[in-house]
Image 1 (cartoon, rainbow, N blue to C red):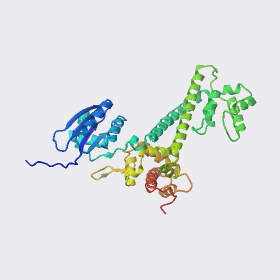
Image 2: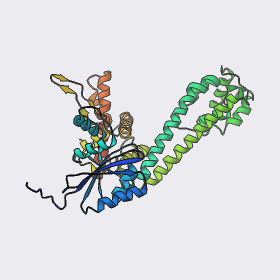
Image 3: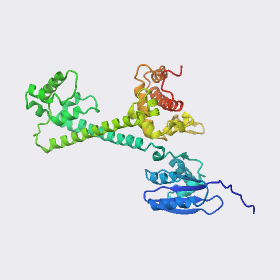
Image 4: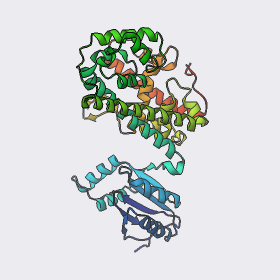
Length: 409
């Protein structure tokens, strides 16, 4: 039997199936047929034990795992700081390979580690560890801002659909933006029109003058509010009732969420203002502080994508078509990518096309020129604009040059 000679620099392959409390590890050593199994608890002692075991082989180590929530973050960080090459396996590719190998749907952790190793740890992605790459603070700011914004929006809808119809239906026409605090402050002070009509018009104007903040034609606004309150159909509720207390409790929570969101946005600007990539991103129409924060948090260093198609695929904005025999389905976005990044680019594109002069609006107008009222054509145009936004973001970061309108010409 011919003995296989293994190169001294052949790496030790390590496949890890991630779980909440324990991780299943399968180690393939180049000059041995038998694979070594380990169960690593989510504890520092076990992490150190695994690092020690891998270093004892005296070879390069390549580790691959499938992400599971955030449970992989701690182990991946320890392995990366130990000097090992850390790779990320697509959960979709893992599931398809597992089904192909087992000829059925089958799921258990030791078997998943075998599947990862069977994939030869070649069909993987580079693992971009936020803490190692220095983007952890940016990522946490972005995710917390998203959580706070969603909570504020949910509460805002609750006020508009539940509390206002009961206690002050006519007040709905006075609000303009959910970003401002004054409307919540006004309702907290006057949760029912009966609180307004209990005092005279002049007394109300003087009392509410500072509550509504800086406004154009403030006196006319307050006069209109008083007249609206006099003819309101809102329920007459006692000022010391539990119903009013609950309404004010919700409004106080809304004001707190607005203050938290503003605090995060101020901190994001302070943290990123001197960062060259941030300055490049904010040169693009409608890429403001929060959109730039989200892009930097979710994509990390965009220079790691050699071509814009790689970045489009990372965002899930690459095109996919179902084909079978003579059947050809409609070409659509794959959406197998970062959803937050895709949403940010989509929203930035929607706002960019309503501005007067930029290449995004020019492309949109050319796209829908054949039939401006065709909803299907407009939807395709919106998708094309979002993809163009992604290409522009990647291009300016890679080239290190700010956005130039109509650079294509």
